Amino acid sequence: MSLVSKNNVATNKVELEIKISAEDFDKACEKVYRKRVKRIEIPGFRKGKAPRKVIEKLYGEGFFFEEAVNDLYPETVSGAVTEAGLEIVCPPTADVTEISKENGVTLKVVCTTKPEVSVKNYKGIKASKEVKEVTDEDVNAEIERLRNRNARTITVEDRAAENGDTVIIDFEGFVDGTAFEGGKAEKFSLTLGSGQFIPGFEDQIVGHNTGDAFDVNVTFPEEYHAENLKGKPAVFKVVLHEINAKELPEADDEFAKDVSEFDTLDALKDDIRKRQAESNEKAAADAFENKLIDAVIENLEGEIPEEMYEVQIDEMIRDFEYRLNQQGLQLDMYLQYTGMNKDSFRKTFAAQAERRVKVRLALEKIVELEKIEATEDEINQEYTRLAEGYKMDVEKLKEIIPSADVAKDIASNKAIDLIRDSAVAE
Image 1 (cartoon, rainbow, N blue to C red):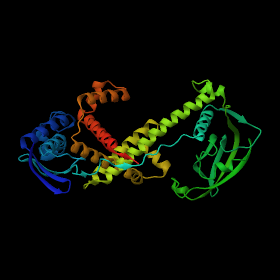
Image 2 (image 1 turned 180 degrees about the vertical axis):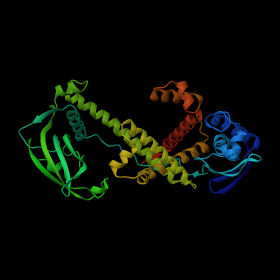
Image 3 (image 1 turned 90 degrees about the vertical axis):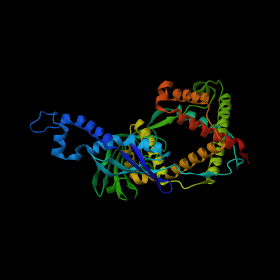
Image 4 (image 1 turned 135 degrees about the horizontal axis):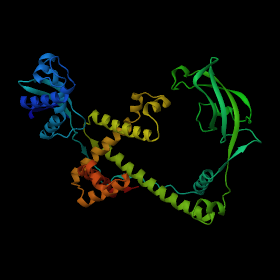
């Protein structure tokens, strides 16, 4: 491979002309031939034994060209990008401008490069920091959450259904007098007031008693995911089989002993107040830091290529899809439930992706300006921390995550420390 030329064709766009010699190209074609010949049958030759020249004469000289170029492409382009001294932010686009046995291959590759940015006034930023006071209402609300978490479920037979109850129902939905797909279930468990069903459905179960059979009249929302139901009035035939309610424990010393390490309710409340105060302090510190970062990126100047935002969105979607999969859901199913298509789904990440890109560029510039570096000890400590989090062997993790990436993250965190330590809280 040889880098023939390097030309700036636009802001943050560089075109590289790359030459693959005839000799290297022929070796790649020979490698492809040896890989594919086992599956090729030519009259007069045993399967897998036809000579390369015979195959090329029969199917054309370029029979192995495309796969050979694809095999050479990653290493060829990577080497050229390194030789050109470029830091690219997304996969390049390439065109083959010449290809032949005699002359080899010529590629023109357009690279999107990391933008040059400037950032000013990142020291001494003024921002407000407000720590929320812990009130008695906050403590009591946490006690109520603990009571609900430790509630037992009882079957109610002496009253009608109320919001907060969990009812067991059969239902079947009809639009224009015809049952529709997905609108029927038996012995379905529904918590009233949860908003699990379309608006109006759960409200019309409230007030009914066990054994009641009744109609629920609703209208599907205009943005409903099923096209055939959008905006349509529907009637659900409902049978109420069972009403279940939560029975909450009394908030007293015995309750405190059951749900905590404390012997009295007052001691439990004191601990809740302490932990909420710590949580409020952390939330305030995080909010303060975010205000500082917002101020920094407001002072960021530079022409940022759109491709950087798109790559960030791709990463965020991959992470979102991974977390969905962990819950047993597929992305297509999620989009169907939420009534979104892939374009509208991508747009939901746009603002956050833009912020992440700008924050990264700003911090990297501050690292450069302040000559911030990660020490070897810091890198090793970070590897240890990550290994514990991923429950992996440190040496195995080092094979997966390059030390340069770890060092870059440490340096960026030091830049945040610098911004925060020099800031002025108002």
